[in-house]
Length: 200
Image 1: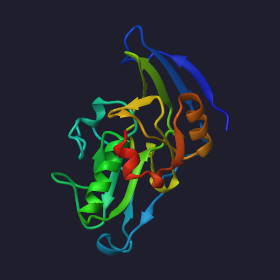
Image 2: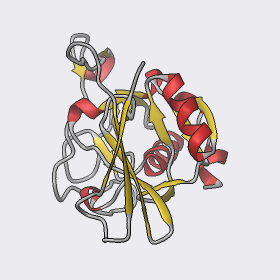
Image 3: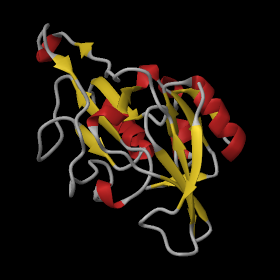
Image 4: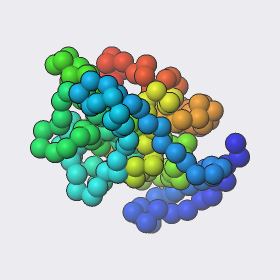
């Protein structure tokens, strides 16, 4: 896949910050994978990611999601709902997404589907500000993909809302290229462990 790379300055950056924009054009219109579930959701119920709206809080740490950079997530559970709002549970970072899911699984909650930002399908930006390398956030529904379709880069030099970001890609080649440039290890998103997240 060919990518057009251009340099720009993000509107939210200081005059001394630098920006790198990576544009990824996909053929045709993108579609979001849908998972059919049985049980409490009903045999014909389909789960789709939703857009995260302005002012919504992270269900793990409480931070306002759209006020922070980096990949975000959302999880639907089979028999449980997040406190104070309709599903899905929503998160300011991939780290919070995994921490919440691990904790709820210990409490007996069963995840139905988890979606993470898919940086293979977004026009994302990497910027340097205050000595940190930061990746842009994308909150629209079409920017998400199910964890089963994603390869992540963990322990890179790139940060999001909660420090070092776990950066997901639906194209494993994109993940490898990202790791070559920014460090870190690639692995299937479903293979992220409690130990890996706990060490971040």
